[in-house]
Image 1 (cartoon, helix red, strand yellow):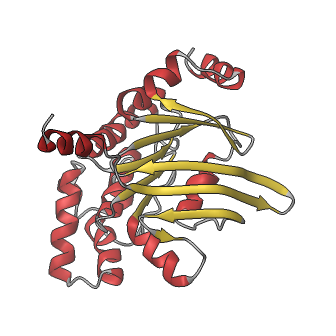
Image 2: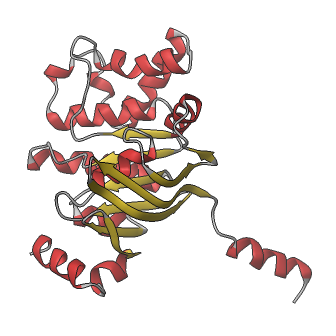
Length: 259
């Protein structure tokens, strides 16, 4: 085998850079341990779905990644930035991570376009014209550009959540975090939001998503993580996760949620 062929094989086999590294992460609320010894590695371009019963620590985990919840033990590193609680590290990490919540959290007194322009102007110091161009680009990206000059109250829940996704994308983060983004939506509106998320996944966005939408997980996720009682009980590639679960806790969870 030639040296060129050997180097080609090495390049193919090389793992992608790490986007998020959580090592032995703990989180307490008083005496209650919400997260216990969380170890999770997410590589650039991966799509990770986190699932589990209510109260299992899913949302707490995803909120520690951008310091919406401070962790009490262990380490979190996001794109090479150690989240040590200092104002600089928190600000730097939040520029790396876009966040979409259960609730849309849009400013009711601002138009859709203005909602999307606000953060780029304040944080990235874009001019009004630059911010408007970026906002227009991402509103079109989530198929809602025609609603740009309406106010949030004039939009459906699904439309408002797509605006929330566009608003996060306007900061052009390399990582997107989704905390049960469809749980506050009526069933008929869920599909339009999931479709936007699937489009982002196809574009190569690094995504960590807390959701009960198992059909979405099957279609999009590289890996699925199952949590219970503040711990990662099991994680596996998507096919193995659904077809050959190992732990009884995961088997029981899937039996309940898939039937």
